[in-house]
Length: 171
Image 1 (tube, rainbow, N blue to C red):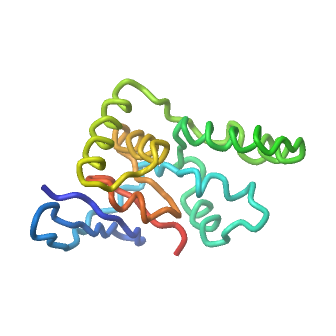
Image 2 (spheres, helix red, strand yellow):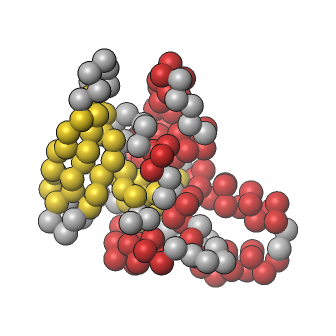
């Protein structure tokens, strides 16, 4: 079985690096055409950048280059951000959220299909002894169920999820 380990988008093509899961641990890469009609799911580390005191400029430039029309977020990402805002309890941050992010992108729901994908992912990660947070797995499951690529700064976790197409927007 081959799982996608990560990806790097170029103007003409997407290069996916993969690892063969099993005893050999074989690595390699595949180049696919870059279909601009495939949306990019921004994970929480990317979607929250406009709210940060020191946002990562490279991530914001990538988002701007792709455009809001090609970006989506998972419902769990909205939950993560709003939880942080509730916990922080800062009215100015809520205003910033309302002005910059609220209702900005299409939100992909956490459906029964997403939960089924999540359960397979979580079981696999546990069997491998490679636990990943449930919220990151839900983001990944949302992406896989909807056939989209994840944009993240968290390559450590997303790179370990078999078959997930992802991009590190921190570079």
